[in-house]
Image 1: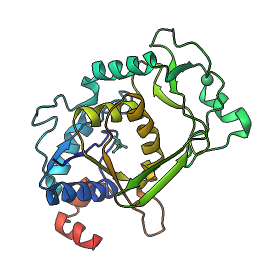
Image 2 (image 1 turned 60 degrees about the vertical axis):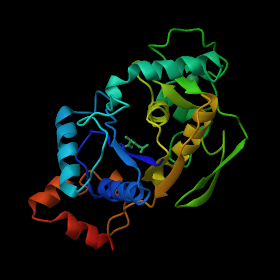
Image 3 (image 1 turned 120 degrees about the vertical axis):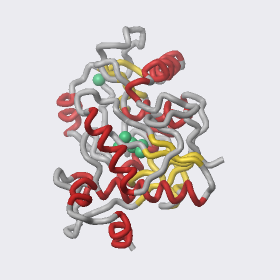
Image 4 (image 1 turned 45 degrees about the vertical axis):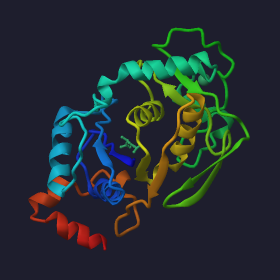
Length: 272
Ligand code: GLU
Ligand code: ZN
């Protein structure tokens, strides 16, 4: 049974880049006769705002998105707001700790960047130099950053349903990554895996900018002994100058388009 998801973060207004990727997600769920869910990825309390949650639901509905489970409609895997799922993240964290996959890290972002002249990974995260790798995990969870120890040198692969065969080398293309933050919240990687697994997502449709994250997440599925979903990474949406829409502060929001009298059909037709 196909289960897909839309997983926006309410840190701002949804723009065309989101709409395009989400539209692909919706069409794939429809084509498979499956279920589409909406998940409110509101982990980052400092950056998420409730008015953006309201706007997100409104803008998605206006555009023609339809989900059968979500924060506004409920469902068997509720709650669909990440801010309400802390228990399940703590559970995943403790399993990773018990199986020896994680370590507490006291490096600042600056330390990590400075080490080794700061080589960067495919998605521009600095490669972790391994400084705290051998620190004991017998420490309180809160108040520390925790990282996943990646299997250095292992070649990882998966068959992406849009981009084909993907490969990355752990420890070279990406390093020990954050799973828990010192403000006692899970990282995006851990929350995403815990939720996609708990909500029985069978295919993750998202932007190609997250392919390196997918490798990190595959390591988490393996460490947690959870079955992973299939992946479909959409090409990135760029503007006329070839700049990534997601990186632009002024990316055209669905709100602005709607106010200017554009219809969702016109927008979709322009995608061809
Ligand atoms: N909330 C995340 C984002 O908006 C979800 C990414 C994903 O689809 O995994 O970047
Ligand atoms: Zn460290």
